[in-house]
Amino acid sequence: MQNISPEAASEIAAALGPGGVLARDDWGPFLEEWRGRWRGAPSLIAAPASTGEAARLVRLCAARGVAMTPIGGNTGLAGGQMATNGEVLISMHRMNRVRLVDAAGMTMIAEAGVTLAAARDAAEAAGRLFPLSIGSEGSCQIGGVVSTNAGGVNVLRYGNCRDLVLGLEVVLPSGEVWNGLKRLRKDNTGYDLKQLFIGGEGTLGLVAAAALKLFPRPRDKAAAFVSVASPAAAVRLLARAQAASGGGVTSFELMSDAIVSLTLAKIAGTRRPVAQSPWHVLIEFSSGEEDALRPLVERLLADAAEAGEIIDAAIAQNEAQSANFWRIRHSMAEAMRGEGRQAKHDVSVPVADAPAFLDAADAAVARIAPGARVMAFGHLGDGNIHYDILKPEGAKDDALAPVLSAIETAVHDEIARFDGSISAEHGVGLARRDEIARRKAPIEIDMMRRIKAALDPQGIMNPGKML
Ligand SMILES: Cc1cc2nc3c(=O)[nH]c(=O)nc-3n(C[C@H](O)[C@H](O)[C@H](O)COP(=O)(O)OP(=O)(O)OC[C@H]3O[C@@H](n4cnc5c(N)ncnc54)[C@H](O)[C@@H]3O)c2cc1C
Image 1 (cartoon, rainbow, N blue to C red):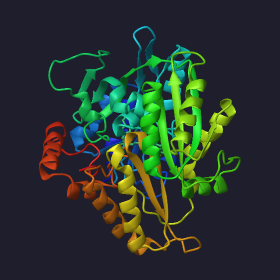
Image 2: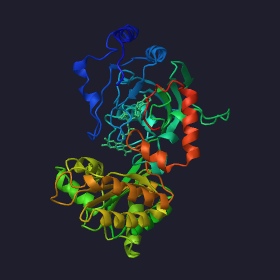
Image 3: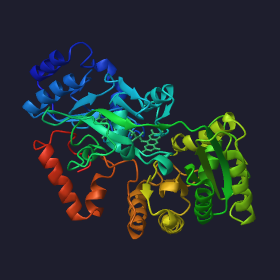
Image 4: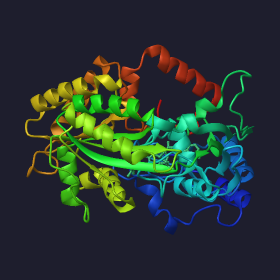
């Protein structure tokens, strides 16, 4: 456990000015993470209000060899934002200005501490769309979504965060500032350095601001909640929906009946939209044309029913119904809270392999933990499944504790068989650090270590995370 000296603490306070160092009474929200898996123990919490202040802070820490951990909205699910070892925790919440919205050029520049919801609102106020959409958008911040390369429900149409970033401003571990905030869609002048920091989880520097891509706002949207017999039927429906809409599918979310039923039971005000069946899909389409989608979606679902691909379907008649569909999907993580120790996986495979992966993983889990409840759901359109295992109904909270690591190994072994990823969108942090060291090719880990050593030779930027 590292502790900074009182002199260093007062130098930092002087460099940042009033509000730049948090009083201990205000530390509470920074010490716990969403799932309660890790507890933070920082030696100080600093909150710079500008890139200049952030650079001064990092320079001071670098000069004394003090380790730092960046934190955004603290919604990360891999523990990367937890200062578990006396680091100086750098909260970006005071850097919360949208510096520019260029509606004609379809770009915006937002500082790291702008929440995702505020960035989306700023784009919308200018008649544009910033399409990144995740369940935590009211709390997570631009610096956090960039640093985790967040995905979410619109990746199928617009890509993940990496596809939405044009440029970055970064404070390097030395305290130097790289102004890479170019808003160019084309720039082939050498290595694309911003990619190192996107998904870098704060291990290579502090993201201070990002230049982001904007899109036209859709003029029409349609959502349908569909019952299907199997994941294989869902994959066939995806191909049919993409072909019929000319690539207009924005979201394609697969949900097993187990997780839908748990969510309906636990989350007040949710209602089952369609007949109960083993699997469900929430599909959303968007279009630049007004009133274009309803007839298209009706025809598509009728054709799919005739082909035996779907069992039942409900098309949202209005915003409220669409909101109810999405509330069910977005409440799934919440519904599983309080269900005791769980084995959680955020994995991806090629889309067509998702059904075979699910069969194989289910069989492996049933062998290791008979009676355990499999909650499978996620962004099937991206091949990304959240595959979570809960204790058997009525069992003690820690019933799965003795087999958690056996379940995780078995599920990740199946992922390896399908050449998939053991962390599709939540990142590595503390949660998957040891696992990626085992599962990635040694040459990949070696290249990552060499990049880390080149940019952070002292090893002071978010040490112990990812690598
Ligand atoms: C209910 C819920 C739903 C979610 N849904 C999704 C989803 O659909 N898709 C998805 O991808 N994720 C999802 N997440 C995970 C999480 O919201 C994302 O990982 C998000 O991008 C984290 O942003 P944050 O600002 O909260 O970052 P934090 O949790 O504060 O930090 C995450 C990581 O980024 C680093 N970091 C933060 N800010 C900076 C910065 N300015 N510079 C450098 N490093 C920084 C931290 O050190 C840490 O390693 C969900 C989480 C919750 C709680």
